[in-house]
Image (cartoon, rainbow, N blue to C red; front, side):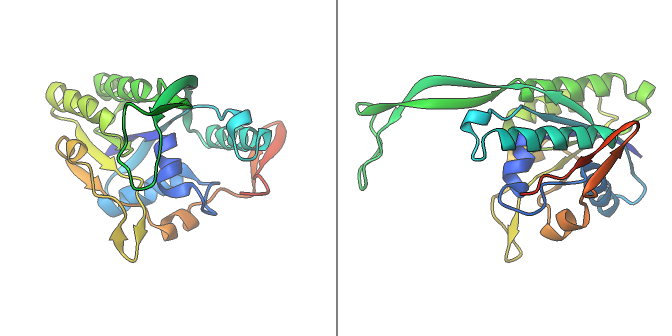
Length: 228
């Protein structure tokens, strides 16, 4: 069964890649591996990756973080992955002051910077639904969401209702520690999926890494960031 994947890059990064040595991830290879375990007869037809550019002044490594992300996006594109960019919204907000031993109070708030990723959820939802509309043209029989974001549950529900012949899967980018899940699977996503993979292992991530130099036609190779 030809399968179209839609990957929430932010969710994937903070779910299994942050703080690891596996950031230079060959996304297509990983998804192919997981899909083969789930259904050996299925194949990867396409991979769509959704994220937002790093804001250098807020990143731990500044401009180097932005450069690393840019290299990774180019490497994914060189491997045939379609990349859709959203954006970040940074605005002044308010949050309850933290005081040890006391409950949060709306009467005692402090000013904070609120950083939000914008457009990604909408882009993923639209991408999945449009793929479902063009399933015959694209020759796909299955759509798989790679995210644990429950805001995407309505999109799965709509596809399930309007295109019941399309098989739906969900891969949660969750870690396992001591063979136990760190987080419980969200029921709202599971309710609309034909199957759900609730974790990605470090062994799978380690086995699915891009080469240190990703070759390009007529251009210098894309080199893995040193600190990755």
